[in-house]
Length: 405
Image (cartoon, rainbow, N blue to C red; front, top):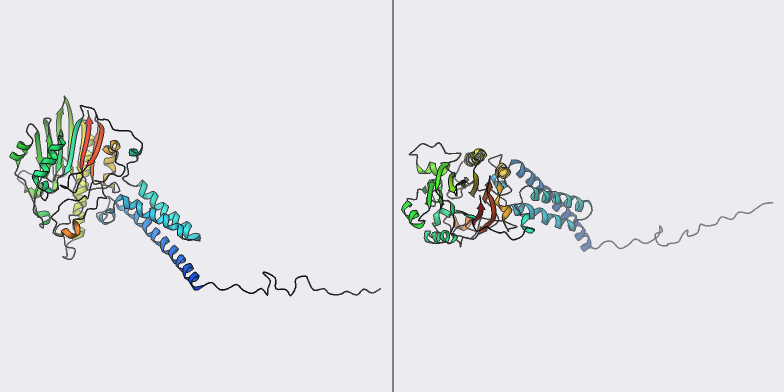
């Protein structure tokens, strides 16, 4: 018996159902959509590149800070900026897509972590500690860079500001006469000893170069620390000003000795009278400034290590929390910021009259740096630390500290 087999067409063959071979293609993407897709692609690439470059800068800056004389152009960025830039990049990475979003976010997060952990300058303790109590018998110390002894604002206003503090000890920097436009040759000694004695009756006064220490307590010993301590008598004031940057005075306080260190570390770059198009040898200049700074800071560290007295160290260090120049000092002594209420402490550059030759360029209020520091060491307890306004007399904030022995 024969069986006839009839071939049957498979079900669905020849139909144009959804997804079938004969299904009509969808409409091509619009021009606007193609432009948006391309823009997002290049946005992601650009953000990834910027985040990578920033991380590279942050790593190089950290590696050379305090170790190379050309680190200052990299170190000049405010610590807040070292955190703000990667934070913005991290937020901006959300608008990327695919792998570029993940890579961009990861690199930006690495940059932010580096900024937070390598000198952010933020005072986290200010967020949870209670009100700072100051004992009635606490000793009040004030430190201030006086901006060429109130040259632009007026010395009468400066004296008024200092008298209102009613401090026990004043550590004052830039007690010097200054002629703008002469660069490093523009400094001269202030011959005002009689005025100082009249303004601070009953106080004891020590001075060297630009450093002036005024104390209610007797000064039992004074010396220049570190660089320039061996200068021969009769050297020109210019040399004294340049090299004597740490003045130690030992005070007799209630039968105990308190060593106070008045500090003004050499600035890395003095803007006055430096023309970048004049053929000036900036490499030699930066190298000299770097060497001086190292000598001053290391000299201070050595003296602190061999001094068993209670110690207060304060002044203008021309260094931020992100710079590594003060790493050893910060591990050796206690930053007074621990007893401050400021979460974001900044001490420079606040509005104040200035007399730079290029005033329109450099005289801008940009209060983003803390370059003024106060430390304690040995048998001394800090109770409160403040960065106070100077009523426009100085670009620097005034440092105010209360301690007991």
